[in-house]
Amino acid sequence: MENYNIFFNPGIEDFQISLNSIAYIDKTELILHINKLLNTKKRYICVSGPRGFGKTTIVNMLTAYYSHSKDSINIFDNEKISKNKNWNRYLGQFNVIKINIANFINKNIYIEDMIDTIYEALINEIRESIPKLRSFIKENKSFYKIYQKIYNQTQRKIVLIIDEWDCILILKRKDKEFQKKYIDFLNNFIERKEYIVLTYITGILPIKKYNNTSSLDIFDDYSMLSPSFMSEFIGFPENEVKNICNEYKLNFDLVKEYYNGYHLKQQYHEIGDNGTIIEKNQCVNIFNSFSVINAIINKEVKNYWNKTKEYNIVKQYIQRNFNDLKEYIEVLLNGDRIKISIINYRNDLFTLENKNDIIIFLINLGYVGYDIETEEVYIPNKEMYDIFKSIINTKLFKHFEQSKKLLEATWNLDSDTVAELIEEAYNNFSNKQNHYENSLTSSIMNAYQIAKEYYTILHVDDGRRFDDIVFLPAPDHHEKPILLFELKEEDENLNTVNDKIKFQNYPRNFEDHYDKMLFIRITYNKNKHISCTIEKYIKK
Image (cartoon, rainbow, N blue to C red; front, side, top):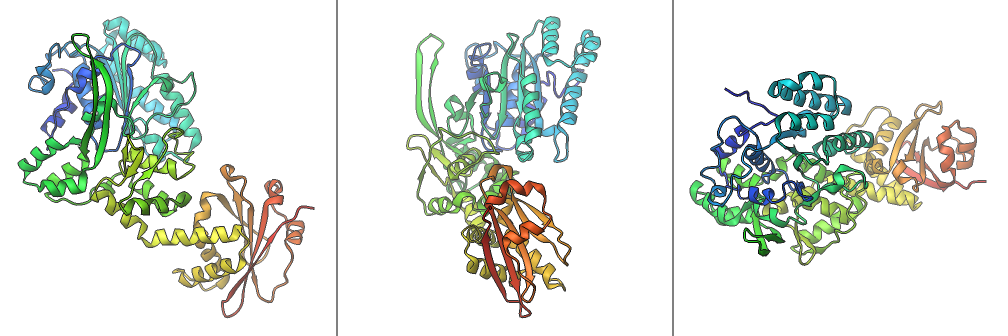
């Protein structure tokens, strides 16, 4: 009996699980589209879209179809693809290398450890499958040379498949160095050689364009924004959902209200078997397959999308009201649409610069729909409507709104508003301590929570009973002023900001910002009433 490989020619096992699953929908005719791209300039395919819309099932299907096997492959005999001419032309004809990046990551992993783990896991299976390569592979860590040797030994070309390629980018979205090293790894892993007949990768995000020498720049993206022939293979089509609802006794109208609403434009040309050009131009209406399947399993139509991994990321962006995102969300909740531009979107979690970028990010995640003809976004169904409604109605969202108002008042030298909001924050702060100064410090930190998006927050010991608080602009927000907070009792001696800077021993990295510094003095009395003065430092 043949060993069950996971990475090198994994075979049919994972696809067999899909066939055995609830609400399996036959998408095997996608293989016919892919076959036409093999060993052409279009053989680099990136399929992106929401989690749970069937990308991994398709990965397992392609793996089962292309993987070389000593045994006959019968798993497709009763599928739609088998009704087509020459459907089995490439069945079992290639060496498939399949990697699911999600299997190799955790929050604390180092990129070097992850790469070594992937390499060792793959190499161990190649050694077992091709004994003649054991000594060569032991001494080599060049993917290029390994692929070359595999081809020379087997005379079979290679299919590379990477599932969830971007999950590590989302997990490590704040670690630029990690991401750079990961992209370097992908560039080494993905070879542009003649014996690689197909490279197929999936993720939530389309591939960002890096530079002309990057292997990632050669990929064609098939996404929620531009699905092309993939449109009919993403999610669940309406006619199939009707059949599923009949089989499992679910209310189709209710399922449609909750999970429908993604309208993908199928617009492309292909060459038929007789050489004629076939034009495809129609709208495909799809359902959220993740939620449909969960409704079947639980026998209940409700919101399942808030259980996905990316929910907390979306929730964070909305609750922090990034670039006044709430305004857009409220327009969408009213049933209106918003026109957006997708031309300059960078597809980079580091450079989400405005509401437009965030909305496109939400399209990729499946939270909003996109009409390619009108270039408008909309809330597709009740499931997503309820998610947005619940997020903006939370106490945390209102807290971030207040925090943003406080920060803007500080920048605008509005000392009365700052005093009012800080006093309100203190009165509402739940963890009051015995020492008023300490609890006030904690209240200020909590009230300015939104500032963490723009600043690194430092505590500077000035020899008194509690520290000054300094908000130092983050590298990406160097245009913001330093915020220097001092807490004083009403009867303490008061100095000007210039005196404070002159006589206090602050770190040297403040020097570059002295012409952009605000000195915020928070004064409190025995009745716990707070007043505020804000001075702008004038460089002499």
